[in-house]
Length: 272
Image (cartoon, rainbow, N blue to C red):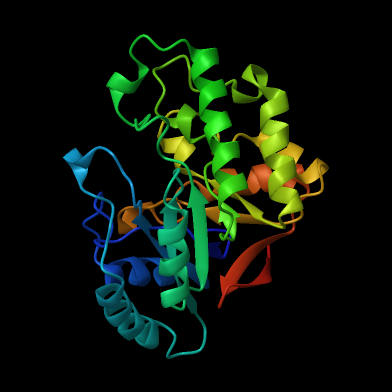
């Protein structure tokens, strides 16, 4: 049983990198005591490497299946299920994302950056012959450019995503590499009124902490950021709320007493 009641970042078979059945995801969330979840399947409109899928789904099919599941899940009045999307920000996608978000009644939109210079840090070859400091600087420059160009999202996810898939020994130190650049990203998010996500996938991917690391989360709060979301980034039912007990320790240390949940793009506080 998790001490945190919400998980607002998870993927189903509508994401190219997941085979999860949405009903199984919902059943698992309810079984472990969550009261608020959001399904946020991947939509990366210009993803360059199609070896593991195109990270696109058909919104009409998504809404048809998910609204049926939501009706069942919320029938007893004790559970709230939002329908969202994780959009992979990239240059040249802005107009298409505007249309996507206008055409469907999303409850919640996650913004993230998966690609730097048309390469994804997920792949080991990304790291070949790349000096760490220069790579981190270029990645965070990409993030800053992306959020300045397009910001119709509610939370920014796994801010130091680039660290998650770095080779062993390089999975930390984002703040130390380019603190001023990260501060500028955080100030931009604060000025835009955006939430920042605490993503627990970092624990299971060898970072030893969430993405972003607690130092970045604390800096966001100190710069005036008031609202955090939390997500497991689960791609299967067993990973829902994974490492949330560790995340609760981080939140307690940061003095965070509530997390944000969205319905109809309207934020509400979920007490811890």
